[in-house]
Length: 280
Image 1: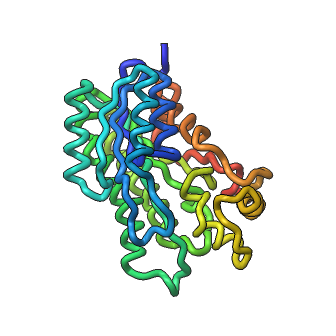
Image 2: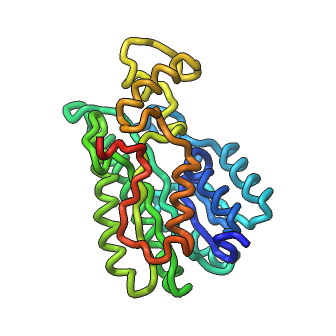
């Protein structure tokens, strides 16, 4: 028996990285999955986003676990498209129990450099996109008599980081959204929580723009082991534990806890999975 047998979860940003790990981990515990990802680049984001081929791989891995999946290329910023997918997935799979608002992007600019478009794009994906998914999921959770909403925030909601004021603002804003929804939805037995990772070893961290920020002037390629080693040393400085980054499954295990009956009375919580970065 899996911890999520008979449950149905929707996950945004599911094509790779954390989103893929969440889909697989929840499927391993018996959940059927509704998944979406934009599967295209965004012009203000300085690294490549997930592809349709990567999304297909996520879908295949879920199916190999003998779980059902409804998947579609959808932009988290498009409320109508998100709601339509959730409605379709709930019809085909039998409802909705778990919402995992994972999709997120970043870019790196100091306050005096950041443009209105760069600011707005990150806010639209990382905060409004989370609201879009959560709002579209709420009626289905109410129909099921309860459920869990898990929002993937960041350690940047708790500590000040340079070059990330738009990202930090969105991730901190997510905390306010979570707390308000936790109060409103508690009477429906719907739990709402945020998870706050430190740097996670995904395409958001392992890319040339990130390396150029942390290793200015070094000129190393993001595809080289030497660059990753040097970047890892820089990232260690963010954490109190002597590690550069954590793996996506570390966050997926926290999602599982909050989505399952292990966390059945946990709501309104900011769960740090941050290698001690917030207390450093």
